[in-house]
Length: 410
Length: 174
Image (cartoon, rainbow over all chains, first blue to last red; front, side, top):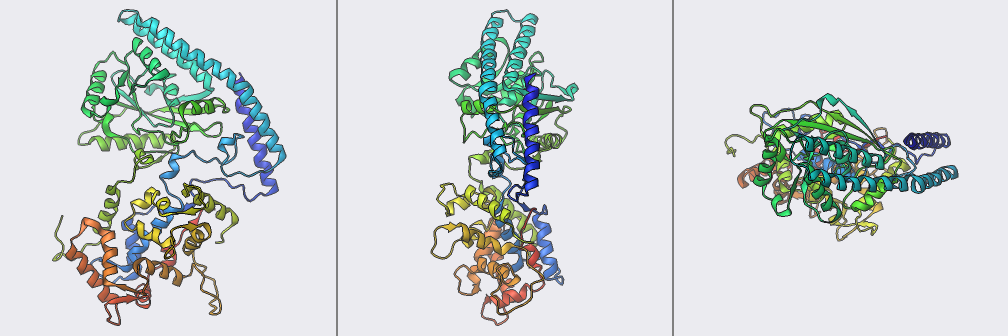
């Protein structure tokens, strides 16, 4: 199918370009590794002890040393040059260019041949691929609206559930074609079952389509206006989804109750939740909000990893609106991704919601080859809480075990 | 380890990224946007180190000049007193750290300045008395001429055995 050519062409072009650049020895063309500077993964305690060790080994009890400031100083300057958090909120840089201008961050003009290739690419993408995909997308959404409404007229029962599943699957499959998403599902024996919650890392709204293409889920989200609202109302007619009014979102108990009721009903599909709460650029997994992990049902983790060479799927919502974003998606070469269904997890004895959430997060990060970060995705918009600074101060004060006569335990 | 043009370009990209207004200069607010810096107890002090006294903005050459303090020391450099001290030598790194303490730039770390730094590094985790006793002890140890302040030479002497070249260096990848 034409998707084969959509993959083959840019890969061939990329290889040609790489070879060309290397031959001419353009030193500006440097593959980007995940950071600019070498950061040592040692902890605060480790580093301060190292500083101490060289300074004064005669001490019986560690106390403040003038050298301690070096640790904070270096960490501070390191974060000025390259920090772990901010770069998660902008698109990942590529090692080699994939002929899309939007992915062009650090590559300078290399040759006329390359520009010609790029021009050809533009023609193919905007002249051929985009109109084709738009047609498919419109068809898919239209069918979804019409068919779900029709199924909604049927009385509750087996036939209705069966038809609603089929309708959803068909429409999502069309939408997947509309994006030329080439998805590889791994470990499908672990697919989420009724009465559970499916959690996944979040990169883009398309995640929903990718997962719904292979199974039926109940979506959770805020009620929107406009086209989105129409789609939401249509979907609810044929199968149970959980849409919240804006005002209800703040009431955590209400949210938890609705989710809890849904999973208690074993005839209802598994709920799909993205615990990060916001889109991250698919190089890391950020803090999972504990809400979904408090409900007490089986959690089915799913890891989604996009291949950035064919199109950057990350939605930078502060830079682009949703329509702009979808157009960009539809004019990329393809969206290639892998989905891993991980074995189901349950909260263990003595584990609280936060620990459970972190355990699930670590499993997803490990499977998807993503960096497991403790940072909160909400940092995209919010200021760093003072709590973080206090953490650092706490850690440092533990290193200084002051003379017992002077120290009163907190 | 030499700095290549590619490294400078990377630093310039970072500079541009931090420069949210696109003015070609960095302001205090631009530095404050770096999340990891905001959680560093002495974050504000480090930001201050980039600004010359009286300046409110930092241009790219100044940015690089400050960062140059953190280049790994060139161990093979021949000691030549006619040449100016390179900015990444052990002495220069020490001076940089010294100035983090000595905010009024009078060449001495006074007891008050030391207390200030301790307050920032420890916050609410210790009481005021504990802070004072820590400061007293530190000055007692380092202050050799008994003037109740730590001069640069006393600072340098107390850090004789510390591996500064390693701890105050940042290496570029590739």
